[in-house]
Image (cartoon, rainbow, N blue to C red; front, side, top):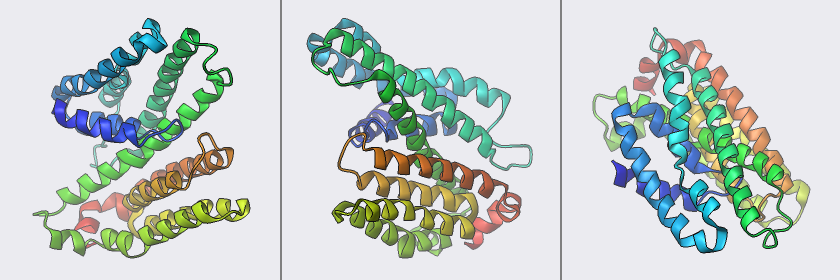
Length: 291
């Protein structure tokens, strides 16, 4: 378990940046859906690569940074997620997913991630203040907060939706997967639309066209949500978040960050509304088997 998590952590870490942090989504998904007996293995799987990186960079960034960077974020997440789930389980008595619990955990873990990462950044700046004179810890805090929140929204709800749909199947086969209306809609029109919009945002030299292409990425999310409830929101949100991140070429681009904020708010709303929709909420297994 520790090795598998460490491998997934390394993959998500290398595709993340300050305002799009998939590692936050990986951590939250694991804590929400894996039994607590696996949590120590998750902590070990994250700690080992962190210690390796801290030891390599300690001569340049200092001992304080190395100590701060060696603290596994998933352990900090555990301190909030465990009491939260003890007080409010992920599912209600009727078996429905409590989307408010997922979003509360997402927001809290995003704050924890932003604070911890900002402290680590501050220790690096104290060790070499002349190396990065233009960096503001306050500005990066808000970028880290957005990145962790959107990263968690990208990953955790989609994992839960995939798990629910697989549980509703007697046997998971390629034929059964392809019979899913959600998968067909995602592959046939949602994903191609997002690819085209991301490509347009990348190649255009017109800032207005670029922003319009990015904002239009929310339409496939809405379409999937209307057809498949919060499962559609989760899948569409994951695709839109990836497409939006792929359309950026500059770190901390204000225009990109504005679109990410809008997407994060829109996706949160769609998940909440979709989870409360009568058709999805009352008969998820039936919808899953028939879709």
